Image (tube, rainbow, N blue to C red; front, side):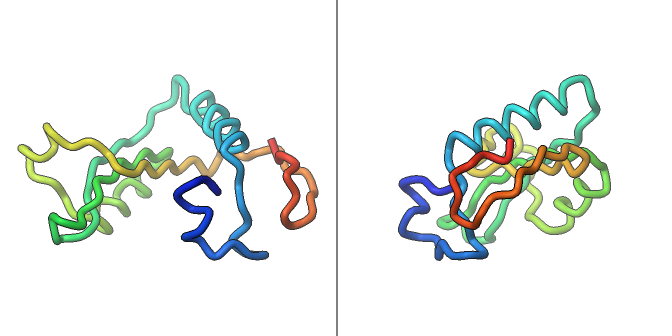
Length: 113
């Protein structure tokens, strides 16, 4: 998503195309509606062993094997850390939730949702 934080820190180009906050909110609402009433797998984990640079990550997945991937990929907090963890980032995996796509030119502001 292109916002104040990413406007000057991401190399926006034909591959890294900007995604508006409005479109992000539409997609987020679509995914949360999709997850409603379905079982999901949630894992709190961390990236970076150095506490000064550590990021807390919450991974929410539609499939258990994707959650197992996060278990193997990221650091596992202790029981004490789990009680206090607040996610800095949330990763949502919902491969069966397909957006309705429209054909748009690169750089277009037309929403695919």
